[in-house]
Amino acid sequence: MPRKAIDITGNKYGKLSVISRDLNRESNRAYWFCKCECGNEISTTSQRLRRGTSKSCGCSRNEYIGKANTKHGMTGTRIYKIWCHMNERCKAKTHKQYSDYGGRGIKVCDEWSDFSTFFNWAKNNGYKEELTLDRIDNNGGYFPSNCRWADVFTQQNNQRRTVRISVGDVTKTLSEWSNETGIKKATIYSRLRYGKTGYQLISSVKPRLLQTW
Image 1: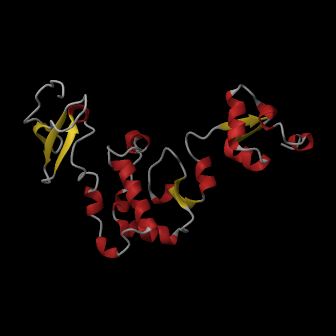
Image 2 (image 1 turned 60 degrees about the vertical axis):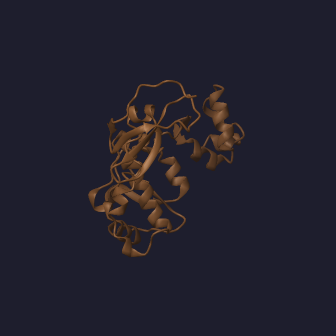
């Protein structure tokens, strides 16, 4: 039998109105049946309701996507999924990556709220199936002058959590050192964690090559 919980029946959280306790869920947490403004019903915990992580049945997350012109016939294509994920990360608080995007102020420009506009920009700015959408300034938003289509290597080097290592007077990202020396990134990172510095991190490189860096 679920433990006793504060009765929140009748309370409203975002678009969700609490109907009754969900006694079918075997959990230490209290679950509640809720009705969304759109008409759907869901079962969620009182903790998620109070923290604001459950504000709708999920319809809010797709509200902006539903506004797009679905007559473009590209639903399900890679470029359409990229556009959806871009918007979700910046606008949907329930998205697992929201804290790294919308949560820290990364926004999608108004013109790219329309898929057709985004698609036309992508088509005219080097989009290819093997490339990914990359922000030039990682602290800036998604808008034409701050975005480009880049390969995975370029994008990884542009991430805000990229580890930068100095060897002599030269500073490169971990990925760049790995690519240039042939040493696995995991090996360099492991040496870094164990306190190695400078040339010790890339010790397999021949001395004559080290002198040129």
